[in-house]
Image (cartoon, rainbow, N blue to C red; front, side, top):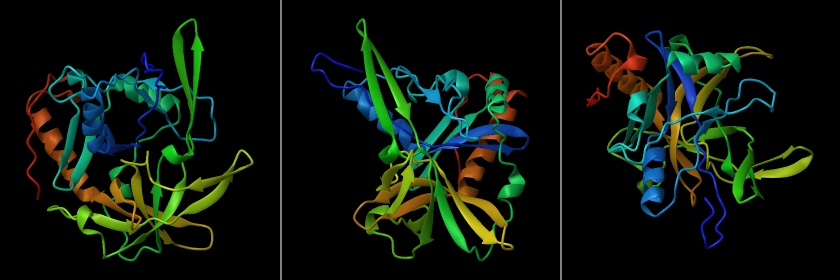
Length: 278
């Protein structure tokens, strides 16, 4: 938002994935995004809009989906109608949003298909390489246009897939009571639109998938979702991720409690959910 001081509007970027669990679609991201926005709101910032930007093919002109996820007046800072759940505690960092039928239709029109449970139930024991995927704020271009006092903010996003390398020596600040996955993040250079780009940090990739890959032959890879990006330490360039089985456990507990209340998840009234980890 542009204030009297002339401060420019900016954007908070996060990554999410759509998965299918027990035949229900869910949007999964990082829970700390909610706390970050809550802190900004408390400092006087205002959410102008929230949109889902889909990435399923090479088309760049697909319009974003208006997505009213946040409600600053709600105790959880989330729109109660969506029955979303955000957890950011002791190293468990995930945001779970059941996908309504209407949102699912919009996603499918844009080529989005939910990752089925078969893509993670049997992770490879000896993966050849790991990747982090997501929208990168360090590569984003933000443009602001003012017309008759109205501020329009446009954004061009790039979603790199970056190789990452497991490490058993994370910095102490990233170690939490709950188990996490740790990877070394390299600096990556490349080109986009004919211009050199430098991938410096994983900002915007919070909630992005951590993928384990096994090379099956010269032209094929077996991919498996094993975690979701949570936080990182800039000095050591180590990232921490919530293990995917823990995120799935949260979703399954959510489904169990919601289905005990009513059959159709997308039309539920808000329900208190407590999650006990395995």
